[in-house]
Image 1 (cartoon, rainbow, N blue to C red):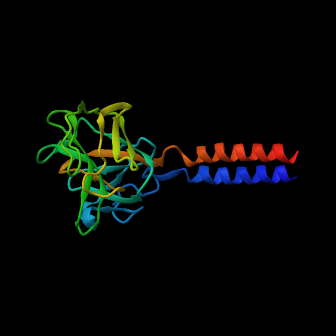
Image 2 (image 1 turned 90 degrees about the vertical axis):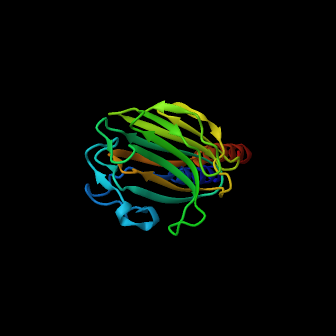
Image 3 (image 1 turned 60 degrees about the horizontal axis):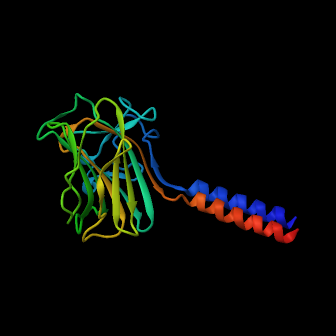
Length: 242
């Protein structure tokens, strides 16, 4: 009976850890198509300006029915507060071949380690620039970092994935585009703070650019560690009570 109780408790705790393993997930499917993301699900326009929000769209979706349409004056932000550990950030992006720009035809996928609506002490960790003129992505680095020379062709008319492996304990980030390493690891923050502070989907008067399936997940997953640790504990205790 003691063994069964311990094993049962181990399973319950491990299942709880599995449920908590994915720390953030957003697929935009729970919002009404055509609605402004500003004020929904923790999203807002830059400096809390509704005019910088983005519209939920059913025109494209990696996971049906919706994505978010980043275009025109969109400068869409979601804040986070991860301050230690290793994290994997993933987001799907769709760039139509018909996307246009009213200024320089450039758009940005941005992460900040420090963000606030007042605009004080802002610090950028990574700025990935898409240029419709050249058809290339380039990595501009973050605040205090030298821009990187890495470039890669923009995949158009198909969903592509951006992944960032962020190590806050060792202040580093490695970026991947559709499964291939994009550039080399560099400092997540230089003169900023040790945190994943915010994502910024910036249209820069270009678009439409669609995004879907944003996740931020701790690696290794707490569920894996819990299952290994609790499984070993349960096995040891079972042997003792026989």
